[in-house]
Amino acid sequence: MIKGLYSENIDIDEDRFSLLFLHESKCFVLRQDKSGEPVEDSTKYNIILSSDVRGNELHELLSDMLCMKKVGKIDLKLNDVVTIGFNGSNFSFLFINDNIRNPFEPDMYFQELKGFFDKEIKSFLSSIHQKNCVIDITNKKLVHIENIVTMPTSLYALHTESFMMKKKKGFKTVYNYYIYMLNDKYEIDCINPFCRPFDRLQSVLDFFVLYSKKRNEKALVLFDKKELEMVMDYKCLCEGSL
Image 1 (cartoon, rainbow, N blue to C red):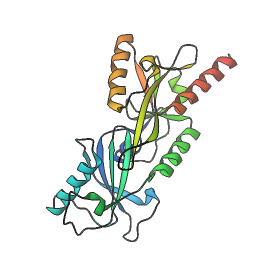
Image 2 (cartoon, rainbow, N blue to C red):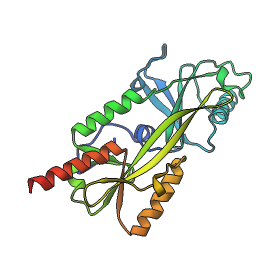
Image 3 (cartoon, one colour):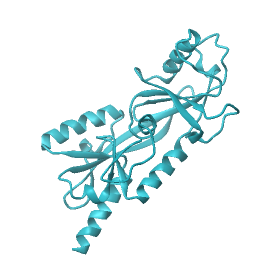
Image 4 (cartoon, rainbow, N blue to C red):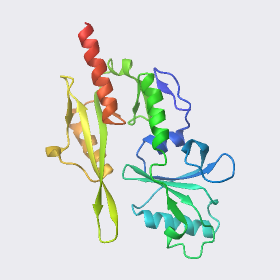
């Protein structure tokens, strides 16, 4: 269970919280509560394995999974879902063929599940936002907005945009990353150098660390720009009621 800071506890385990919200480079294997045909509802799947990821090529990471499955190093069954997180995004695949002959051709054994966790993420965010809570990804906690406004901290948020780029063989998803700050005038500013996007999440995080150190400040990074806007609106309402 994830504990909130001065807020209600939320019933979600730490591995699932990490998978959905923390932008970490990890691999997860999920399995249904009950065996049967695969379903679209991600909440019906439990995490049975999590590990750190090295590398940034999906093809190679899936091949590694198949190699480990072939030699018995991991427990991977038909209709399990493999989710790989890197560069700030999650990619999910259904394991559809356990007759592994060539582990270096993962398309023969996995079927991509686009947007597999979208509904679960949306539902979770809706539930915590109704409680006036937001996600502090810096400290891996939930924070109540009422308490954020009294903290001597600067507030930031990550923002991701994606688009499809045509290649010789199909399309490639390209991600642009921004970091926003709530300034003293209760306005939201993009602090990317020259407002240009970063193409790697790690570059954003490295820049943020240097930026906040230079300002010698305590800082919280919220999950997304919408949460920063929620805090901005709350602060404006508080100022207006004084």
